[in-house]
Length: 375
Image (cartoon, rainbow, N blue to C red; front, side, top):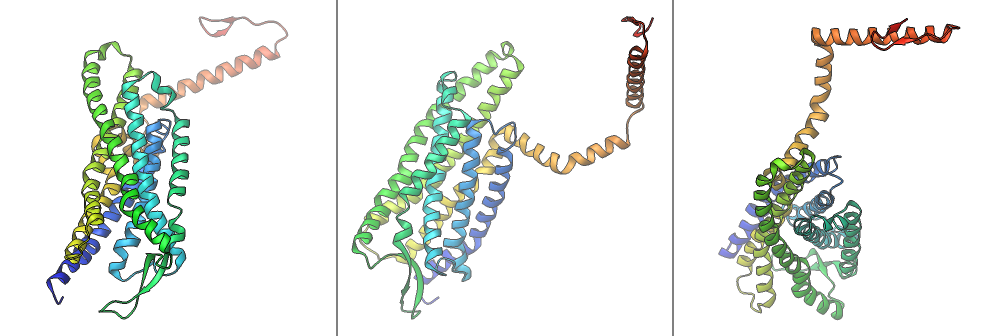
């Protein structure tokens, strides 16, 4: 490190990317995989909100892969982006696509919950399993089309710096003046509005509505709890838990991604490039916070959703503990259980004998219902 500016870059590469980067990726990968298993369980997969959470977990996993490829692995001298134009195009497209998809799935899920708490009866037409699959498919198509220009615009280029004679970078095209101007506008304005501003505003409004309605519904549940049947109370409580899980995820999005977008807006409007190394360190910290948003969804579900915790425990019990419980039960049956099973077997054999005698006898045989024997 020859200057103070090199210290800031060292902090960014070694401490932020190389130190905290793998930790964020591991947390996101483990949480995303567990979320996939939980939300595909029978008791949750018919809820529209659970379907959105399932595809949100897939988008989060893609975000973690892009986080590793774009920011973490290069600090270990593993440059996947510059292996070929194919990897450059695919991973740049995947990064923009994953962020857009994750943000808009969370946005649609917020709308789904806001409608369900505002209009519980009419919401059944919108908050359905089939509607959730359709909207998710439409979101995938839309964001694929919006980001498809990246498959054309990014290529591997050779660049020269003072310290290194020639390096390979994944960068947008410089041979096309039209695309260079287009990408400058797209990355500075369109992407900020599309990816963060619109989801931020919609989620903020929906969260205010959800918070107000959840507080009121909690008090009404305590007041009318005795008048509800058990099944209805269970269904309402499950919807309420899913709403709280969404609320926690949306608040995390608003808190963790807002500083990054403010920084991007300031940098896009700034014409001076004086403290580039300090800006590089600041961008590294803010990017880590933004990617942390996509890594903590599972842990937010675990903290805020009792239903999610129950299904998570059942998932592990069924796969790991249940076979041992069944084997233990077979080995250690109580005397009362053995006696009841013996009695049931005896009754079954007596009735089978009676039916056989009735079929073989030429005369009708009457059954005494009181004694359950032949007369």
